[in-house]
Image (cartoon, rainbow, N blue to C red):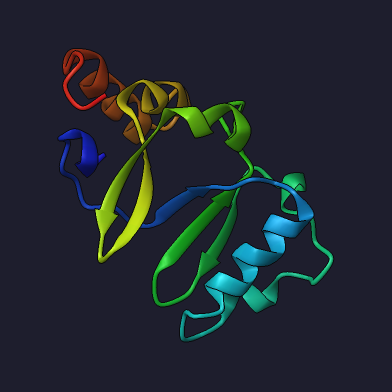
Amino acid sequence: MNELGLVRVTEDIDLLIDGSVENQQLVRLALRILPERAIDELGADEDLREWMVVRVNDEITVDLMTAACGVTFAEARDAFILRAIGGLEIPFASRDLMIRLKQGNREKDRIDLEYLLRSGDSGS
């Protein structure tokens, strides 16, 4: 949400990932860089598509989702905004995509959605 102008302290990093088995393995490998290697607590054959959210509690907390509010990575990929950070292109959700992803029942999501709807087209 910081990317779209609403600054709030976040408790985790949410990653919407391609749910293919091959990509799941790449995500697991990438998360092994974290110091506690909490990702290794998942069973080697555990399919992340079977869960709404897989929370990896390490030095930072990472929530892995293969769909969020019914939106898959394949549906979302054209709505990413790329930002260069440290020489890497990092995809962030556009304003319109965030509106789709904030359709949940959590109070934080309702506050975020209200902000996004009020903010108009700035940042999409």
